Length: 513
Image (tube, rainbow, N blue to C red):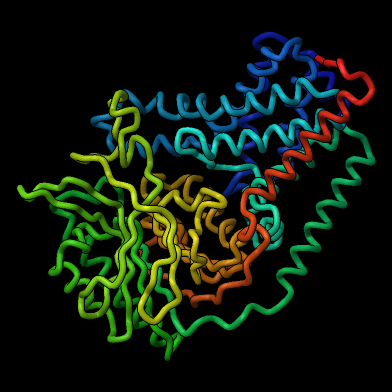
């Protein structure tokens, strides 16, 4: 450890920035799907050492920015695949997209770096880094519509046991504990022993939550349909009917499998985001054909584009929607996506930046927000389309649903870490809210989780097929579901308050570089 510290303390000038970038990139290995969490002991400890040698807050800010840039370049590399789906149009943007986005996302790390630099070396600076890091996560999840992807707490989402703490403190609270634990090697043996005790305590808490038997599932079988349609083929005129038929045939296979494996349960078919190449909400004939795959007691929940039409027959507004279709082809319910993707589903800044990834003549409209969607014969669902599921504390409206439903088109991400990272956030929301999560993804990973984050079904990335899951019963409301982000905000404030007290208790004017 001393050799590691001396080596980093010897880094200056541009070498310190390159080192910070590399340490930041190392954190991506702790994220899904690798979950190499011990690398954080190196990366965050290294960052703290570099900040301790920064001669000014401005230098600390640049070091923090370099660390954040490296973290997001390595963690968001898969976004390049989204650009490559329109390579003939956006070829010039391919080498720029990830570095520029990561540069922007990395700027939030300046918050953590400057706060840590102002704190006194030792445990106050460690508290300041952890508190500042989570404060930066909060800002990143809110500013400019927010992008809280790869929050540090998601490193624990490789199983149900390590994420049970999210039921109390949410993913941001797990981030706080994770960064603190990552720098304990710099604080001596007692701190490391305390870190081990914290881990054991979280493990014991997880076992206590998972020990009681889950309530029996509801008498329904959810059929998650994964069409595995490449994004490049999705909207071509010559592929529309083959794609539609594929989803209908897979639905029939799922209904037959459910009749064999779970007789007496109600089949609920789920198609992913914009799975239908036809506008189901507006096309009675397409609904009739899709409904032919349903048994009399069945229900289809399908991702589709919905339009609002002008007198000339042209679309005035488009919506990324989910519709509930009954066996007679009627629309029993509808939900419109409310958290839209900038430069994908709408153009921010009044279109001043002419970069649109998704081809469309008009911007998509936003729905009213999270809701409990009534469904015939089922508990109300909490629909979440695509990346709406990544926003902790913002997935449930005023009325608590009986389950959460995430439909997504992860074909944009390709065969990469992106779908695994997205799946981890879905598991985290299930634990935070104490609600089952059923997830259908275009190319995968489709999965089901009960209210404690235990997996009930999975269809791997890049496969075509169906996954059958029981519909788990809702759990009791968790402390996080009751108080939301207030709990991790208070904890973050306590960490920052402790850092301030530890830094200024002896010498109120002390300012340590």
